[in-house]
Length: 332
Image 1 (tube, one colour):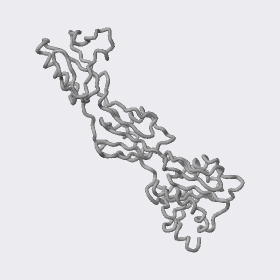
Image 2 (tube, helix red, strand yellow):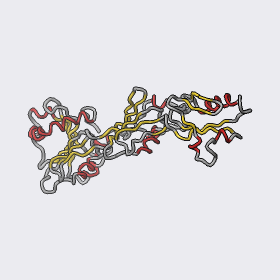
Image 3 (tube, rainbow, N blue to C red):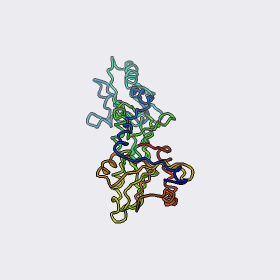
Image 4 (cartoon, one colour):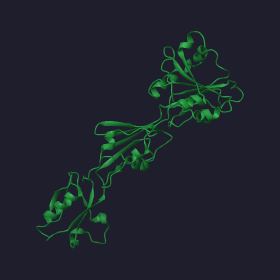
């Protein structure tokens, strides 16, 4: 490369040796604040249904009759957080644990029932909810129950819409703070050690603004939705039907990454020698990132200024690369 274009291009040859020199990707740790949170005993709230058993007193336990379903004999915690129970009257149940409510009912019933033995069970949870939004298969609120819900359980129950989800940005919102989690690299064990708190919100980001652009002499040039960090160069080329056998006479496949301004910033261009017997193996170990532009030319590129001029109409696509994955990146 000669002339002014030399200063605007940084070329990296994709070879087995270069791939071997790249640091292995390590799982990312979850934020310590999330790992430190330990679930508290369940606290009753409005909308909960409680089944209250007073042993040896079926008239109190099942006033609707023992033949009725449990829910028919359950007590609803009203919107003001109270419930009514015979002899006891109005009880402010909201905010109490199961054991605290059981003790409160036992104490009040003792005036009317000798040594009452009381048990309380939640038959329907309606107050302590986890909100899910975004690219999940199911976005119904999930209930926080007496058994703490983990992040992994919530994701497994909701299911991920892999076609539209951006796996690199799951947002867990808690008490005014947003935690951004990359599910591609997050330590899998961490998902089972992050307990969700009532009122938490999970938002699975959409991948609408994250794409890989495969252009030039390929069968179906197009923008590919970027779903996970596991997309390789081989997969990207395969999804567009591969190289055009008639017009793709170039020996090289190029990947442009992290370019904000073609006129003022050096472009990082990865170059793969496509005619090597090991080229497909090498390409299968090179991971493309959101915003990358994969280019297959009709002939070898000898004039970079001409090459870049061909991309001028696509400048908005190329400039989105840095935004898509956090700035210029000359590595994997």
